[in-house]
Image (tube, rainbow, N blue to C red; front, side):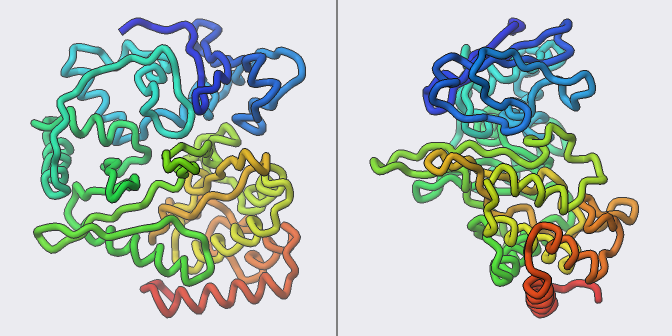
Amino acid sequence: MGRYTSIKVFYKNRFVGYAGLVDKAKRGMFIYSDEWRKEGFDISPFALPLSDQRRIYVTKDNHPTGMFSVFTASLPGKWGSFIQQKFLGQMGIEDSSMNVLDRLALAGRSGRGALNYEPASLIGTDTYNLTLDETAAEILNMARTGKSDALGTLYTKGSMTGGSTPKIVETIDGEDWIIKFPVRPGEEEKSITEYEYMQCASKCGINVAETRLFGSSNGSSYFGVKCFDRIKNTEGVTLPVHMLSVADIMEKNWRQPGYDYHDLMKMALVITKDSREDIEELFRRMCFNVFANNCNDHMGKFSFLYDEEAKRWRLAPAYGLRRTNAVIGARMLYVGGNSMIPSSEDIVNTGVRAGIPKEKCSQIAEEVETIVRENLKVNG
């Protein structure tokens, strides 16, 4: 596979600009097209703000990936990268020979998110119409041996998914669903737990992604989340919506601790143009994560969708909610500077600093805690 020096970026067939590499491929660069500067929007609100003048944007020396996160967000996560590497290896393509532009070309029009890339490296696959149980068996075999008789199918359906959990994108009743599969003993229970957590969050007044448990022949279930970065236009055609996680917006590695809910709310106030609804929603999610013992509430677990009509970002539905143990005793997102077990004062003060009245903060916190205690098995 050839190494690209630049690549075109598109959004809904509109030419956005050129992405490239500089400094011997150590740093990424981007330049908006003249057309996009006149009629487009900031595809990354802080890193790539639109300018009246033609401007070349270059990533900082210490950037976590070397390329702007709005583009690397189109690339697969840990599991997807594993599948992609195995599939390319089967075709005689060395994964180590590819740079980030090669990977974006491989994503083409099938990558994560709403951005597309040209030229696209098209690779044909033999796709089988597998049941969920058959898919689960192939994924399990792939995870244990690195081999699968249906590698082309796993590549087509799962190589561009995010996260480390094995998953595929499946169209069911005309809607796209992300379905997760267990690969280790005991992971079947995680499907039930995640479903229960999402249902409980909804009872807490949180806007959650639509979820389902898909049945298995062995009595277990596969957890599914409906893709919420898709909308249907007036003609019934499904179109992607531009979405970025907080980590992508901030150009940060989501694994890096030390980020606080206050930072999250402060950023949200800017990009949502002071949407009080979204700020209160973030406060509810913070309360839920604290009381439900979800310590894996990192910057990759909060995303925003761009509303083209309103010309602002809006908080995306909640996803990835489940009980997790703290890493070395600490939360991923701090609460009022507290990385351990936040106090009631830490929780309320975080909301107050974001402009929510103190009485309302206390009310929401008490309400969420009660619902969590009644619906989930948590400590305390």
